Image (cartoon, rainbow, N blue to C red):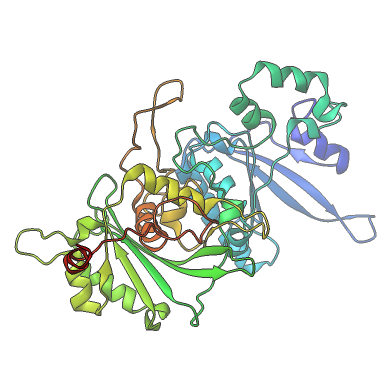
Length: 417
């Protein structure tokens, strides 16, 4: 904040002749623009101040800049309205139409810290023309001359809980302790990946029968192989249909969407579905049977235990020491999967939802299994990983083979007698 608490005072020091109203909402500051020779005033630009208390009042203009103060304290609807307000200027005037949002984090599950996390990914920055950064308290050396080791900063580090210190003074949102896949990071695991027609395609499917929000998820991957043997799963595409948003959709509709994608022309496809997708609902065909009849793709399946499935997924999030590459990267277009991992807003309601453990009031994990919600994309990948690699065990990340259980036939056993 300004030492005297007024932006207008700063502007008056820079541009003598600034005029500002006594009101704040709505308020107005007119700043003179000097001519090229500096001897006269060529015109004015206007700064208007408005309250975001009523989102419907944020209209009728298309500013070249918008500064949203204390963004964590306003609703997501305000963000959407302001983003729309500056779109005209972005289109008409290159390098203008900025929406600058600032403020400390008020918890790590709102829309504001979720966007900050999402915009840490270089791929998403380029895709959405947005980026996020933080200015920690100790970077203000006028106030804290000692920087990070300033006595006041050190005192705050000792007194405040670590999560509160990181959010309020380091400018970094701290995800809740209940997140299932806590090693996921948008800056590390989200990047643009492209379909390679020369490599096989792997398809993981979760029909979304259990839990909420009941989303039919299809995650499409390819494997990248490094010289040292490290393998990296690359999620190149996603089909996500929410049952509440589209109550009339059918499995055949999902199949038709899949067949319309470029990667479907690849002759080398492996498909895996939740074992529940092989069950019949009365006299109706199972999911697996619809896929086989509609597309010709035979889907593999096996029962996957929850905790070993989580372990296998976590191994794919690890970074290989030699290549410094993670075992899993996700294209920014796969918004459902990214949101379930805690890297962005949910694509259906814009809110922050993620795959979480049950926690008590202190934030400690309770129970032996996570909540069965907001995990359809994660489960689709987990079924695929288990089917291709088996459960986590010995071996290098990404190349561990499934456990081979030797089963002798009756004829072989008879020959040994």
